[in-house]
Amino acid sequence: MNDATPVSSSKSKIDYLEVEESAQFLELQSRHRRFVFPLTAFFLVWYFGFVLMAAYAPSIMAIPVFGLINLGLVLGLAQVATTFIITMWYVSFANRRLDPLSLAMRTKLEAMEKPTAAEQSEIDRLAGLAKS
Image 1 (cartoon, one colour):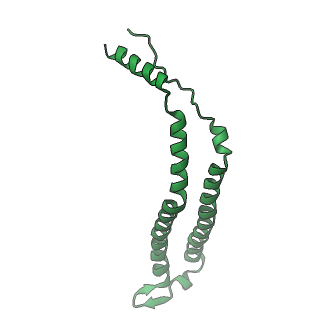
Image 2: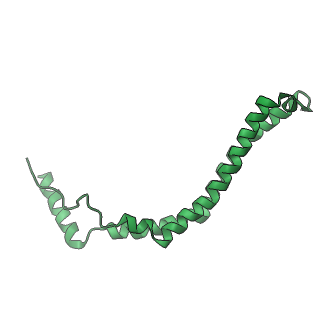
Image 3: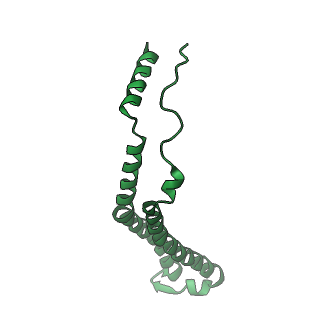
């Protein structure tokens, strides 16, 4: 049995606490929170408002809108539509405002983790020993 261990250790070259405090990460976090928190608050008010109306104001929810369709049904379907709209809005927002910044951060961090030529040579050598 070969006791050789790979050169790449579990120790990272990246100081993640430093990354967490970087201006780039803080901006990413701020952009995300400025979008998600207000939208979440809106949706929770909208959702629980619907539930409370259904529970405590059934006569309002029973108001006919057209034919056999009442206000409760329209608002219930609007809940489903709102979920899809919010999802599409978030995906669009993330693609435009979050992904470019996170890609830049990831590229920088991956470059920091890339092994040096000497480390890569040792990794390749050990990989060759492991195969034999």
